Each structure stands twice: as structure tokens, then as C-alpha cells.
Length: 107
Image (cartoon, rainbow, N blue to C red):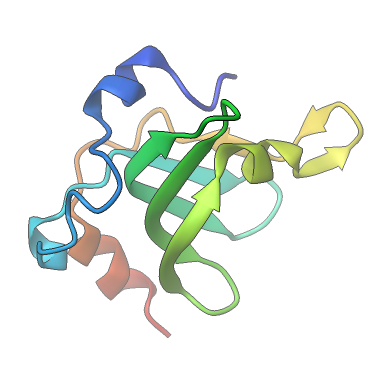
């Protein structure tokens, strides 16, 4: 499965585009998740970098949930065993606002 698609690229606001928005006004564009664990990454904005990688900003749900940055290469590099991807894109996530996932996943 491709983690990044042309459709996502078109929908994804540039970095800092939402910095003045409240979480309830910030849509999540794409959700990535660990198919073998409980981590999830909810991207609200992102930009393609000079090296071709993508830098995202959004809600990172892991050991300590937080708003933060992550890259596509970091996600793609996580493998169960060599050649078996660990991270997937949630194709059925739908439309959600940042505040929804933050409220559900706060510890």
C-alpha cells in the first residue's frame, strides 16, 4: 500500500497553515497506524522536502501522545521484518477534526 498518494498531496495544507486554528477547526487529512502495535499518526499538514521526503505535523499517539512532526521516510522505515511494512494508511478513516482524536486518546 502506498502511504502517500496524489489525492493526499492535494488535500494536505502546507506546514504552519493551521497554526492559528483551534483543534476543533483543524481537519485531519490522513491517518497512519502501526498494524502490529498501538501507535497512530494523524497528519493535519505537511510539505514535500528538498530530498523528496514528506514532513508532516499532527497528533502522534504513542507512549506520550503529543502534537509533533514526523516524516514519511521514518514511517516507511518501520518494518516488522525486512521487506514487511509495519505502518499502513487508514483508507477508511473518513473526515475527523483534530480535537476528536485528541479527546479520545488523551491519557
